Image (cartoon, rainbow, N blue to C red; front, side, top):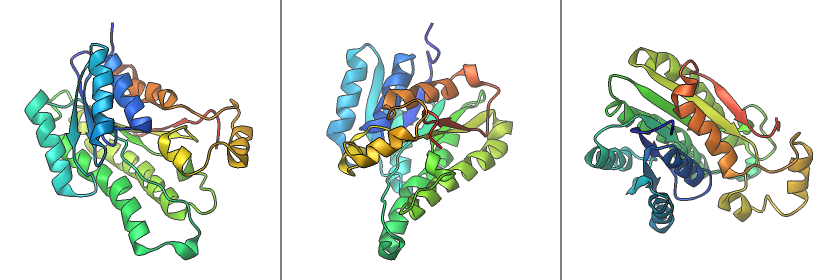
Length: 249
């Protein structure tokens, strides 16, 4: 029996990469999924088509999580279509690796506004749609929150903030029966990672060499952990950061 039958999930930043994998995995377990996007409607619609083509339920919904208007729009569409919410996956995020000397105010605010403020704003709006039985919030963090590499100061700081938010919100929202956890991926093969040039060269070889399970992660590896945290299988787990990295630290 599907673990998420009758549940409604919002996945932010789900038009590609890890977010798309999460959306498809939640739908495969029976959830109705809101596939959020900020810029790629084509990508989000493709994810929706894959889900509905397999017999699942999904819609795409625009909304830039870096500002309150965009988040309010996203959750208004969720309420209009499904009337409630059971699962929120705060996946939307950006990264930029650069030397400290080149970091600008714009670089800083872009990463913090999407990665951290977006998580706060989306969780605020989700509270209005969670019912009396509560729900599950899963934040997508990263192994860099505790093992930051060089030239990742701002990005790693955003993920450290996500880990802290996860613990704080798990304590604050527990009386509402809302669990809050994070998944912390290692290097995962996505469009963004390819664009950044991380894969296909010496850097990839180094990451693989430092990963005990001996490969780069795939979006589905992360998605399976999110499904677990979204389901009642993890009903006694909250405030945890689940490292999904093949052992990379």
